[in-house]
Image (cartoon, rainbow, N blue to C red; front, side):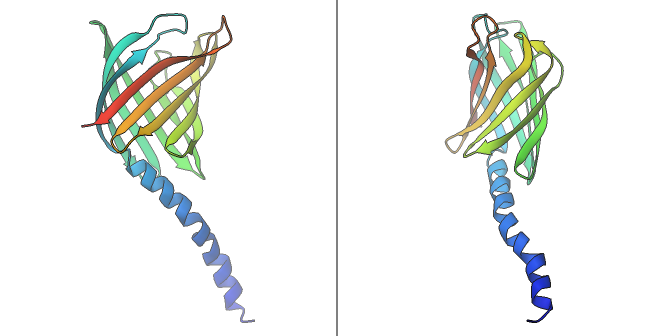
Amino acid sequence: MNPIVPAIMACCVPLLFSTPANAGEEQFLGSLKGEYAGKGEVRLRTNKAPIGVSCRFTSATTASSLSLKGRCRGLVVVSRAVGVDLKISGGAYRGSYIGAGSGPASLSGRRKGDTLNLAIGWAKAINGDRRANLSVAKAGKNGLTLTTTDRDPASGKMVTTSRITLQRQ
């Protein structure tokens, strides 16, 4: 056998198998780019009643990153900046989240279908611990749903602490 063939195989076969996964992530991330607006509900703590909010976000993407920045307003006096910055490497997403008032939180997780499922590591304890979950899900061609869940320290049950439904503008 020609010694060049194994060298070509060693070089090129990994590219054949890695390109579709990267292309899939690039396509998924690109589909999230745009300006969004919408409404939802936010609980400041698992044992508090939800507050109605209206939000506006800008989503910027590259082949390997997502930046989602915006502001949500509730009642007359509550306004909070919210942001997600993620990078993908080897199918794993890692980054940061701002919006809970505890300082920057860490994010890590994976995509399943049209949803990013991310674990949140808060900068300080919220609802009795430093863990929660965030999902960023495509809703049709032009929508996004952002959902956070956290464990209620009193009951031990998972509680939806925010759900925001956005439409591309």
